[in-house]
Each structure stands twice: as structure tokens, then as C-alpha cells.
Image 1: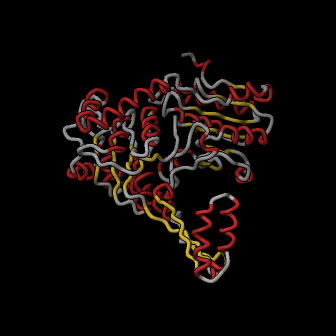
Image 2: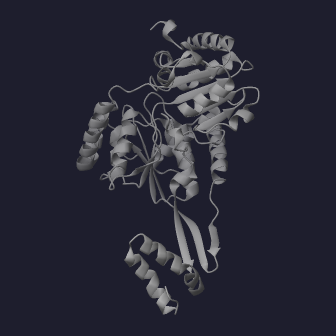
Image 3: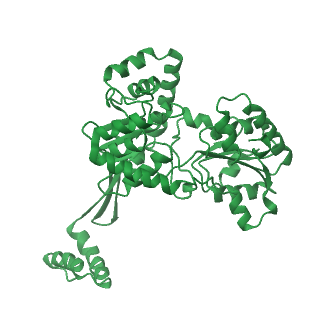
Length: 440
């Protein structure tokens, strides 16, 4: 692939509506239907075959089956003991920041009288069990474990079960060490769609969970969606696909910074996408030049070339148009590298996570600022939020009426029930009103 095909510069103001939609289109997975069909077969096989099916899939797709599905505690201890001190310090600082930000999200109890004698409350209860999925394909991602394990612990989840691939039969030691730092004891050496199926339905060794969280490949994402459709399966956290970033920059931005931000997300996956919206042609040209230069020194060059061919540097007439297009695209990561980023932030409607100014590179959110990096992609930021403590809590409402409360409000409920033609609803209220000596 020649560099001419990478990061093309396109002027948005010259495009009509259809061309603009095409400009903002995500890379499509041409074999989506085939992936879903194969994933459904995997789920059925694991559901009926249990551990044996999981091990067979590991042997076929992970370069060898693990000696045992559950990683023994002594391996977690050994991995932590062997972890270089600098790596441990970095992980612990990330855990501290993630814990601080997510602890602040814990909701306060809600209780109020909507009218005299009528009290409404909202209480929270943690999920009983969650599956934490951590990818381990092209790179181990201990940061993904921190982002799910810490909020789950803060919410009070009783059982946190980690599944992660064992390449060549062994889980990466950085993930095992992070599991120990996060207090996760149940670790299983299994990845892919088979791990999602095992968590959703349980096997002889792997426990069934109520919800599965964490990023993954197209196969993992499809499996999460398949098991979430089944009431006997497990809920999912949020829809997700390949990683993506959109940068809005004016002529005050540093081209080398913007280029590096685009590359940081593009290196995740060949289907990842990086977009720049800028009114400055000079900046777009400088960003393209810097990105192609930086690309030469990066280790994931093949992935980057394929994803950069799906990426764009888009010229817009002004920042108003840039924010309009950004809200239409609804990016997973939105970087505002403009003179007054907080003024532009006020107009952001759709984004997974926002990074303000030149000193807020996206990897800070990926690793250690404290926010969560499990975010909606593929435009789902229009309706979904990133992972938080709330994803591990159930919110239950409570109501309590006194006799005077029912006397005052009961006739309203009775009237509305009859308006809807639900006379059994009305009867449940009227019987009580009669017992209180109050005519319905």
C-alpha cells in the first residue's frame, strides 16, 4: 500500500449530504453476517459441550490449550512478584486514579415525599456476579482489567470472574499481576467468543455470571450481543466496535501532537478509524506529513497502514461546522485541540470521552487519568455512555403510602386506571379507599 492512500485530505464544504455521510462512514466489516453465524454456533457448542468445547476452541485458535482453565492463585502471586517495580508502580497509580474517579460516582440514597403521605425512594443493589473480559490477542491489555475490575469492586459486586486468552497455553503475566492488584481471584485462561459463551451459561469450571463487560474483537463483540439476546444468557455493558478518534483542531494546534493522537488509536485494529476536522489546510498538510514520518518508527506498521487508509483529514470552513460534524459522527474519543477548548466543550452532544487542549493526549484516559476507557463506538455514543460504577448497580424504586397519602392520591390512580380500561387496577385502589371510609 502506497503512502498516497493514507490519510487523504478532503474538503467537507464541497460535498452534498450523501457524500458527507459517506465521508463520515465507519469502516464496515464485510463478513459481519458470517461472524455472527459462526459465533452463534460457538455459543451453542460451548453451552452443550462445556469445558471440553472451551479447551477445543483454545487448542484451535489460541495456539494451544492451557494446562487447566482456572489459573491457580500461585501463578497470580508469582506474576506479581516478578513484575518490575516500575511497572507495578505505574499500575498502582492507575488503579488509585481510577478508584478515586469511580468512587465519586457512587450514588447517594434518594428519598422524598411527592405529596403528604406519599414517599418515593430509590435504592441501589450491586450485581451479584460479573464477567470481566480482557483481550490478549495482538497485545495484552492490563489497563482493560483495571477499567472493569475497580468499578465492579466499588459497586460491591460479590463475584468478579476474569476471562482472558492464554496464548500458547499461558496467560500474559502482566494481566495476572494486575488481577492480583485488583483483588480478582477467579481467573480463567480462555478468550474469544468461547469465553463469552462460558461466562454467559457456565461450564463445569467457569461460573455463570449476570453481566459481561470489557472490550474485545469483532468475534467477542458479536458473542456478547448474541448471549445478551437470550434471557438465560448474560447482559452486556455497551455496544462496541473498533476503536476510533476524532480530533478538532485549529491553527494553534501542534501538528506532531495531532498526528501522534491519530496514530495512537489507529494502531489498535485495521478497522480503527482516525479523523481530523480542521479549518486550516496548512495544519492538515503538516499533520499528514508528521503522521507518515512518525509511522516509520512504529512497530505496528501493517495495522496502521490499513487503518490509516480508512481515515481522513477533513477540511471544514469553521469550528462550528467541525462540532456539527463531530456530533453527527459521535466519536468514541473526541480531542479538542483549539484555543478555547472549554467553550467548544459546551456544544459537544455526542462523544464517549473528551480530551481538552494540547496536554491531554488520549492515552492518558486509556491508562491512568481516572476516567474509564470502555466506551461506545460506531456512533453508539449518541445514546450510550462509557462504563461506570452504574453499570454494576441495579437501581430499585420504592414507594410507601400512609393512610392519608392513599386518601389524597388514591382517587387519582383509580381515575387513571379506568381511563385506561384497567378496572382490576382500579379495584386494588378502590378496595383500600373503601376500607378507609373514602369514596373512590
